[in-house]
Length: 591
Image 1: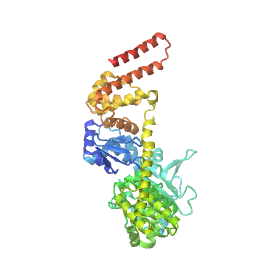
Image 2: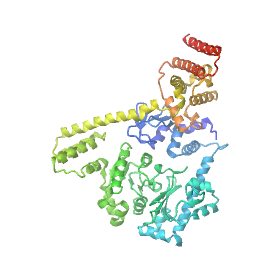
Image 3: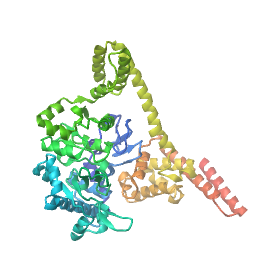
């Protein structure tokens, strides 16, 4: 579907990029732009920049960039047309339908249909006589029939082809079932149900679609295939971007979300009235899940298992949450119990009291720092206060540091001056470490990686001129006619920059301004990020036309040199002719 440019512009106008991205990323103003932690890769130092002036964004860390449509597609896992449709729907813009190539959306819809039919199949089996073993297990775990129905729980039969046969009856093809990851293919070329004799938990996204499944083996039967078998990533599902229970929690978590470890923890808490609980999906907590939670709440309570793995997960989660803008609190469950076990034994009131006693993230870290130290000795106190100073150095909030420094000084009999000096010493170390990290992760890769334009190697000088030229044309469209008259498309040195240049010229011929939307459908996400970085580069300063002339001169010179050096003709006269051409170009440039 070739969506008219004016429709794209209307959609972008009605979906302000700053307001849209702020729903997913905590942004802070820096001059006329905004910065935040990139939602597309893990980082501690903000390298994600939003440029409201031209409606674009760019991450200096991972190179992703684009406009509000590109961002929506990346964050919601949609293709370009789908993200256009979503933003159009949000803002009340009517889209033309003629010629719309919706093949990917049709595939996704088929997968949603397969998942819905599969969930129905598993639930029916659970409630049948043959599925009694699974129903008794769930009832034995304290779940009611109402809760089982609410979460659509089910059971996979102890069969290799029951689901295949059911889906075939419903008109689905084997290839569609494989794409949905509900069946597998053996080395012999035969097909089989991926989930067999397991209690099934459907995974439902924020829009209410079944996107995948988590299958739990019965106790004692998890030696073959593991305790859990989960849906792999598909066109509609990425485990790192989803949370179990988010479809219910999103409507009940404006003040707080509880992050627990497993599916049963979530279900038990919801059954007890705590409808704001969610869990990761068979993976460690991810930056994408942090951003998803930050869209719906102000505070997150970490309530992971009390064993060593659970405590390690809390530490990792708290690191990811440091710059999320969320208030972070931690609950340590007594006696090493998990939330499911605790609430069943002690009831909702005790659990509520436990929740109300959640400590701040820093307080939890300070408590854990004392573990294993003999605080009644001078050596133990010194080690603890050193660890505490490191913990306090990680917060930028002056009041928080001051309060905890005061408490520690009073409790352990040290001077405020000494402990404050130690905290500041660690803060300086942190700043140096962060600056070094920026150089390693952001600045150095930006100037050394050739992943986007590997042809850069054949003429570093020429490609730099190409990039400067494109940057000027993207920022100053009034110079496009001049560039067109003086630089033919086929003189561009690299294929990528030639394609960008061609796109700019063609848009100009159609009286369309060269903003990011003209590239989105024919360039990859990485290439669009590269274009945004060019668009927001301002190296030409106030002598734009002079720089543009120099760029064209360099490109033509390098083009001729490359053709000369790669020529196969050994004829001396031909070589002399090429050499004279270079001389003429240089003379013309000096006039």
